[in-house]
Image (cartoon, rainbow, N blue to C red; front, side):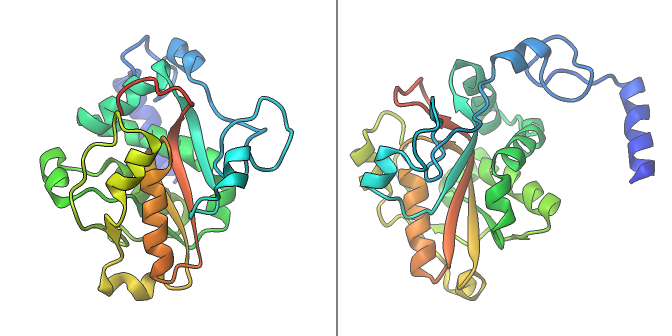
Length: 244
């Protein structure tokens, strides 16, 4: 580890770190100072269920979670999905900016520390094979894999399978999103023994209505998972700021 740190510092001297957002050069790998100041990180107080930020600490769970509990037990998101974070996430998701995975892994590691502490397994929300072929990588897996390595948790990249292609969730209402992904996920027969009785932390990039995570959680629970929780890079406010 000491040798690796020395090598890293040496490389920084030869090739000074560049800002991942394209802004002014940072002191270390990451975003420029102006970009950092625009990111809205989610901290306490927040809903213990869906992870939505509270303006004031008034209750353990928000009204939506009390009225309609999710299949996933708890969720945490690192930042608010807004103009500042959206560009980074879209570049990561659609423009081959896999260098952002390390940044997002660190964000989720901090935001979901309590969920990681109680999890046995980390699993990414899967893409349909056709979409994976076109995109060439699953952005959720690019975060889940190093997060599992960092925490020492079991990584199950194929705990879930998206058994049918679904339309994009963008632009759909909450009920439309739920209908779109209903029954779209399953646990492959060969993975059921690795899922049964385990506490599974799902990883995805953005939490909007929770429809996709809900469908994934239901499939894992049907296969015998003891508990499913969720961690995402960002979560959308009530007013959708744009494409995901």
